[in-house]
Amino acid sequence: MIPAQFDYVAAESAAHALDLMASLGDEAKLLAGGHSLLPMMKLRLVSPTVLIDLGQLSELAGLSADGDELVIGAMTRHADLAASELARSDAPLLAHAAAQVGDPQIRHRGTIGGSLAHADPAADLPMALIALGGSVQAQGPRGTRRIAADDFFTGFFETSLAPDELLTAVRVPRRPGAAWGYQKFVRRANDWAIVGVAAADGRIALANMGPVPLRASAAEQALADGASVTDAAELAADGTEPGEDIHADGEFRRHLARVLTRRALEHRT
Amino acid sequence: MMRVEFTVNGQQRSDDIEPRLLLVHYLRETCGLRAANVGCDTTSCGACTVLFNGSSVKSCTMLTVQAAGGEVTTAEGLAAPDGELHPVQRAFRQEHALQCGFCTPGMVMATVGLLAENPEPTEQQVREGLEGNLCRCTGYHNIVRAVLAAASEQASAAAGEQASAAAGEQASAAAGEQASVASAASAAGGRAGR
Image 1 (tube, chains in turn brown, yellow):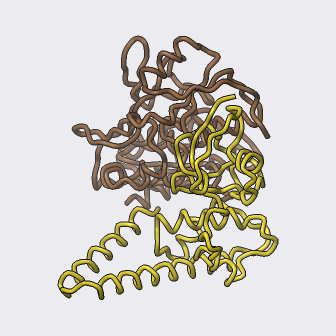
Image 2: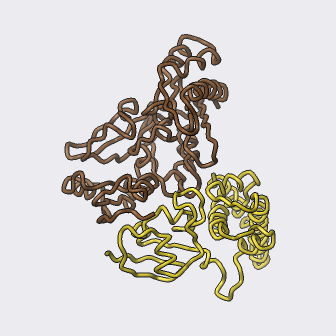
Image 3: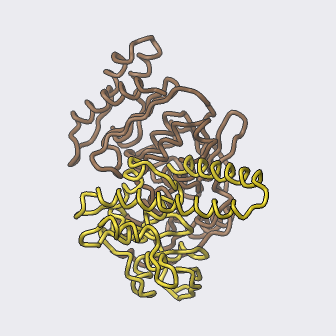
């Protein structure tokens, strides 16, 4: 399978990428690691006229501590996030989530910014960002703003990023030693979650239980009110309307959400 | 068309290509390097695995232009100039880690990448480290055995080099220091590998 023809520009800096986005408008798509975009282009599900490649922007890659937050550059590859000592000590759920994406080859190319901007509700990093109560940093012609995880995912493969904004970094709270749990139910080794659950700090996030990664609000509230893990987990699917596909119908997904939430809460490390 | 320059198996390349040309097609059709196979063409099977800047990647899901300025290594680039096989290739042959051979170049390249990150993997780490590569023939047992054999051969070769380097040292204290640096380095390698 071969993508439709397009023009290609390698951005030389974030500012250059923003200039290109401003001048090219809707014609252009940003290329990060390309592990969601290129498969879609090969299937001709999308056929952008121009690709703006962010691959050379080392300024957007890497991790650093900023006060009580961990800052992850948007072009940080999943493999580098998963192996980062800083992430593993201060945001272990995020490092673990990065290690669950696809397979080693995919993790060598895929980026955290690309995964979040792509906003697949079944993906690992969107769910992890919601569970950690993190945020993304967006840069555009009107300046830089921060978008909380809970406000970022607005629909099926849709985010609150404006068309002329570039996701430059991801921020999550630094919580060394804090308990977390992560459960991903798959039938094939390198697949997306049929249902996923990530739990940290009283927050519970669900993958593939709706058009966006969701919070299991009823279960969170029950935990906050002192309910047992078993009782709280029974509420994990409340308010969700998961879709059906070849892997699972809605009722099975709701069952998985309850069971995986219990396991995520029981197995918190 | 646009000009890209990068290194393939140590050889500098400069070619005019279409931006949409996938790396696997460039390697097979422009370079004539046909070890990397197009299997699933959907980033699943790993038959097209090559190394890009030392890390395993699926060349069906990379544009050739994305490799600009980098180093690509295919299975053709593993053997020594005199034809002596790479330890991973040798182990795959010795352990009979292939039947039809279609997945083998990808398996071998994924293994080289895995052992670079984690030189002494456990069997479980080998199985998880090769989760991006599918084999329809072998049931994987011989492949896993080959990877473990290659790892232990590389470890003993490294130990041999270390020992001869140490023997060359006049002061035994310096040799001891070197050995402890080596073991610290290998521990760090183990942590870096997922």
